[in-house]
Image 1 (cartoon, one colour):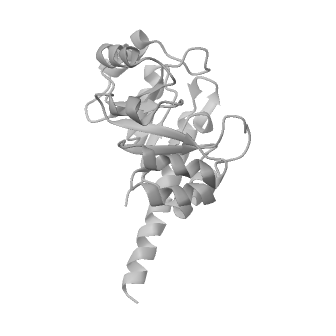
Image 2 (cartoon, one colour):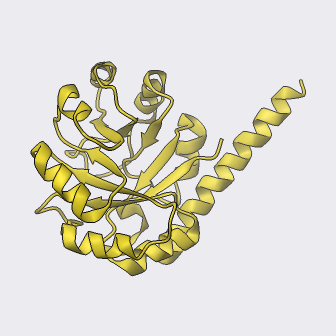
Length: 215
């Protein structure tokens, strides 16, 4: 299986085009004011209109009214919605687009609420209170039992993403700061290295599966 890659926190067209040229599957636009990678709907709309077809565009929201999400969907043309707050299962079900619900994993008890949501995908991340390190891969692996569309995030970089992919085998991985030269500025070489590491991990997984089938 090919692991999908999402580059989040896009703030300019150059970074978007660089990511697409490198083979990214999805771009994330953060509509959460007072966060480092916030982008206005107007600026996001200008970038999205300039993108080639068949690139998934994801709008990231946190604890806002349903109408605000729908207004930004209409203005920007985003194709998926990522909910990064305490949105309820009922709220998530009201969104007109495919929904990715984010869960911050710290203990195994955090996994219980996944069963309450009927969404397109679950994104598991490390808690915002933990600034260093990566997501707990053991918990992420347990989360895979709840969904076939698990998106892995939290401290991923070109140096550690291959190990994470091989261990968890997620549907997709999500990265923002791990491919930046500075906040709001993506690094082309880090983007290429990140995607290359994911693809290499996929190749190893495919080889292992083929070898096992010969036994």
